[in-house]
Amino acid sequence: MRVGVLASGSGTLLEAMLAAELPVVVVIADRPCRALDLTGRRAPAVLVERDTFGTEFDRDAYTRLVVESLDDHDVELVVSAGFGTVLGQDLQDAFGGRILNTHPSLLPAFPGWHAVPAALDFGVKVTGCTVHVMTLDVDAGPILAQEAVPVLDTDDETTLHERIKVVERRLYIDTIGAIIERGYVLEPPGPEDPAPDPVEQS
Image (cartoon, rainbow, N blue to C red; front, top):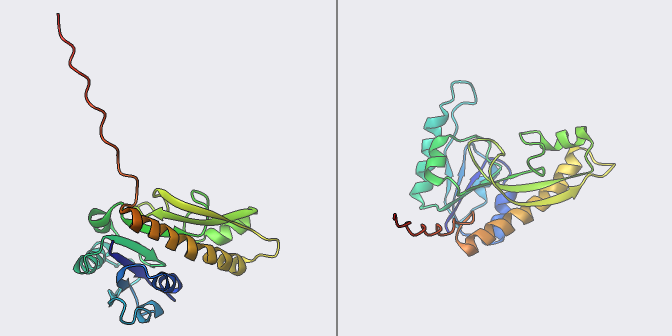
């Protein structure tokens, strides 16, 4: 299964994926970043640069460019690794059900961009990491794997997030590896029940 990785930042998740020898065939970034420098000769690194972060940003046109780059490399499974741009419907049309993401909480608790401080503010004793299928609704797709991380009395946002990231790297790679091994993301539907024999009319 050919994996395309979407990245935006330091590339620590990508680095772990490459170290685990996952079949990454392309890395796409929306801005110049360290992730583009990590692949070496392992896979092409493609910059599909976002031209603006203002209200004039054309999300649909940008999404089409990303999808074209994924298609150019015959990607079968899309993996988000800290990608900073929310993509539009065209990605779902092309790869729906085959786009993975991680989130630093036990979804459905604390969705959105500020999950770690939200967990601390709420005072939970346990949070964690979720691997899920990406949908148009942010952090709302089917959950594939979760693992709990205790919240320590001494934790602040930085220390808690760093401990979640350790779990995230392992859980994400294990989940991707299992998907590649079985050949699909979600359990395929079973055969339809056979239709009942028609009732003879008397």
